[in-house]
Length: 301
Ligand SMILES: C[S@@+](CC[C@H](N)C(=O)[O-])C[C@H]1O[C@@H](n2cnc3c(N)ncnc32)[C@H](O)[C@@H]1O
Image (cartoon, rainbow, N blue to C red; front, side, top):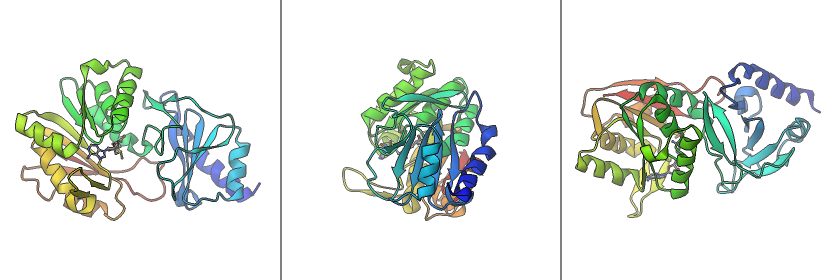
């Protein structure tokens, strides 16, 4: 075993041990260049590891470390096959979905459901903030919701949530996540379809929310061929969301677009905001020691 690689993993994992406790067993353990190996990332989900690499060949010492860890390890290649599930690399296979915990909330995780495993760990601090702000009696709209992790956080705060995504399987997964935390999906709302379409519809119907979460893909094309690019079009999304917001409401606007700095993102996101507002930039969780690719803004209106 190459001592240096071994030490880099040991150091990065030990450094994060204070973040793992009875309430949180899902975490980024190794963050690429920030921990000394460019393009190598390691996450733990309830003691099962997910290794991600930017290249299709793993450095042999990295592979050895995984084999010797004694844990279930799956491997995700970030360079291609973007739709594929991670492959089994070491330890016992994990063929079933299982549960991982973050900040006391349970989430369903699967290594067999394609490119993503059910939760984006880089949003942990934002989920905490949503939980704090989404108090009882609030209505919170989670757009581009994926498996509804933000919805569960808001529901745990006491809010009634509306979860919006193009994909029915993801909406079903969001319902499972609510149930896992003793929140009845029947007491929450689910909308299948396009966020832009639904925001216009809500505004027309006079339906409003106290909080709205925006976390769109960097690039997308709707069914009429209209293109959305974070770097040029995010202001349209914020503008539409602001029209469905209660006075004194909030928007969490997030993106992992690498082309924009946080300052440029703030300029773009607030470009067309006519109402008076206050913006604060939210940092990534402390264990993301590498590139600060996730940009998040909390906008109070
Ligand atoms: C990056 S994920 C969002 C992650 C989520 N915010 C979270 O933190 O768990 C993007 C999601 O947006 C959904 N999506 C993509 N385009 C959409 C659109 N136009 N309207 C609604 N959902 C969309 C995808 O199905 C996917 O679930």
